[in-house]
Image 1 (cartoon, rainbow, N blue to C red):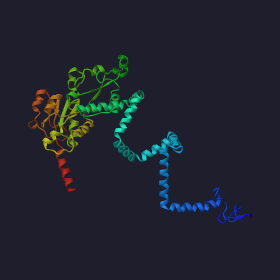
Image 2 (image 1 turned 90 degrees about the vertical axis):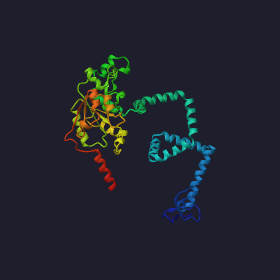
Image 3 (image 1 turned 45 degrees about the vertical axis):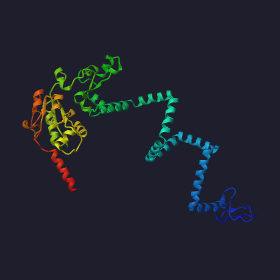
Image 4 (image 1 turned 45 degrees about the horizontal axis):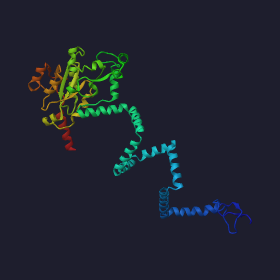
Length: 390
C-alpha cells in the first residue's frame, strides 16, 4: 500500500490495512492508532467513579483470594515484601510511615491487644518456653545496655514504696562526685586509691550517703547526698551528730514554714539563716498542717519541697512529721543548733520554745532583711480576688 499521512501527528506511515488513518498499531500498542483510542477510554473511565470503585474492590478481592489460596503470585509478593523491608530503603520507609501515623498505629495495636489479649499472651508464653536460651541471652544483653536506667527505676520504686520524699538522677549523682573531685567527703580518699585498696569491685567506687539519714526524716534530693567510701559510709552518721566526731565543723540551722506560696521574704529568710551556721535545713509543713491552718491548698507538700530544694542557700529539705500546727517533733528528730524565725514570729507566740530548750537549740528571731516584707496569705487573697473579677 502507498504511504499515508497520519491525521493526528502528520507523519508518514505505511498502513497495514486499507482503512487505517493513524500511524502505529493497536496490537503492538504503539503510535497514534493505540494512544488515540486508549487515552480517551482511560479519561472516560477515570471520570466514571463507579468504574474506579469496581476496579479497586476487584483488585482487593482478587489479592485476598490469592493470599487465601496461597498461590504462586501470593508467595512471590510475600518474598518481594520481605526483601524490600529488610533493605535500607525499606527500613527508612517503614520508619517514616510509623512516625507519620504513630497515633493511629498505637490505637490499632491497643484495640487488637484488647481483643486478642489471651491469645497473644499464650503465643508469647509458648515462644519463650521453646526458646529459653535465646530469651535468657536477650534479657542479659538488654540489662547490660540499660543497666543505669533499670537501677534508677528500681531505686525510685523502692523509695516510693517506703514513702521517702525526693528523687535524684544518675546525672545529678555524677555531678556531685565531680564537685568533690571523686573523693570521699570525710576522709578524702579517691576512687583510684579505692581500686588499689579493695579487691572487691563493690568497694572500689564511692557510694551515696544521705547527709541527714532517711530514718531521721532526710529526703532523697541531691542536696542531701554526698559521696563516701565504704569505710565512712558504713558508720551511718547523722549529719547533726557529726560535729561530735569532728568531721563537720559549724552549726546546723533550721527554719520552718508553710511556703505556700514561696515569695521574696522567704528567700531573704533563707539567706540570712544560712549566715548563722554551716548547714541550712528547711522544714516544710505537711498538707494536713495546711488544712489545720485554714489556708488555701495552693501547692501540695511535694511541689513545695522540690522548689525549696532547688534554692542555693538550702542544704536539705525535710517534711514535717507533726500532726498539729507546730514542728516540735521534727525539731526533736533533727536536733539543730539554731532555730531561725522570721520577722512575724516572737518568743511569746512560738510554741517550739520548750522543745528548743530541751534539745539545747538556740532560738533566733527577726531573721531576714527588713522584717516581714510579704505574706503568702495576702498573695492568695489577691489571687482569689483577681480570679473572681475575671
